[in-house]
Amino acid sequence: MSQSHRSPLGRALVIANPAARSGKGAEGAAFAERFLGSFSSASAGFEVRRTQAAGDAEHLARKAHAEGFDTVITLGGDGVIHETVNGLMALPERERPCLAVLPLGTGNDFGRTLGMALNDVEGALAQIIRGQVCTYDIGHVNGVYFMETLSFGLDAAIAHDTTARRAADTSQHGENLYVTSGLKIFARARKGWKASVSLDGESPLELPTLIFAVQLGPTYGGGFPICPDARPDDGVFDICMNVKRPLMPHIMALFAMARSGRHVNSSVIKIAQAKRIAIHFETEPPAQADGEWLEPVHDYSIEIVPRGLRVIAPDSRTSQQA
Image 1 (cartoon, rainbow, N blue to C red):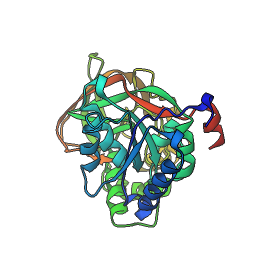
Image 2: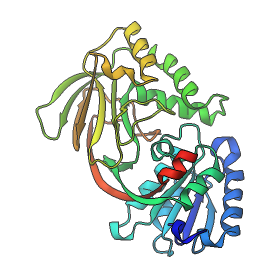
Image 3: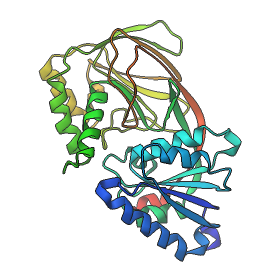
Image 4: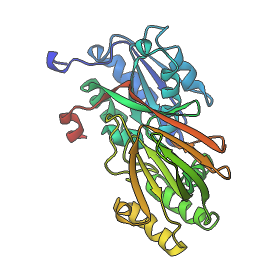
């Protein structure tokens, strides 16, 4: 590796979910181990640790600084990345290692936001060792951190359904999985969840919530550009919410339009930005953060942590090549 492309990794801990993408995570972890072992200039030493149960990635990330790691590389889907982020954010800012991701999942929305090669461990590793350290915003809701998406209502119910179907080893992935779950959920939850929403302390909006998405990056659900202009480093959330309750045919039309981001032009939809959000629901809604189910409650307090985490992202050359 040339001096102009010195790796940003330092001493690296690879947290790998071997069950990711129907077992391909185990192959990916083995490849990462061989790759980093073969290129001494890629890091200042490394370890690969495989998760065995939910919560393992968060626990390993919490210990990373104390064990002398400069970077935590997460191999798997958005769920294991979400765990890792929560582990890193539990550390004081000065002690947080950098985060790098090898996206190997069915959604991969955070990897998509970073511009990483998706489901391609070799390509993503090449991007990381030639990448650059950026500082990205992180979201916080009721004690939980999130790096890409938080949502309530229909889309959260869809996210929960897709998670359950992935656990049951469905053959569908990404956008197709999200679409088929959406068709099923729409038939069950047409009335929505009434909510009172305050953005940055302003007077509350009374909403007939079917969709309320809080985004750091532009996509959720495996590539749906729900907030097409969202950026993870601008210090604000982008929010997509319905301000009217559409009839079922209109809901279906909006769902189809959302696949290309055209839903933002509908009079039913409002796009906003905020740093702090307070929401009160009359009835407890479905809720998810980065595809992970949140315990339903009536009240949610959401705030942004500006540039809260250092992340290794591809430079322009490697992202163009990916």
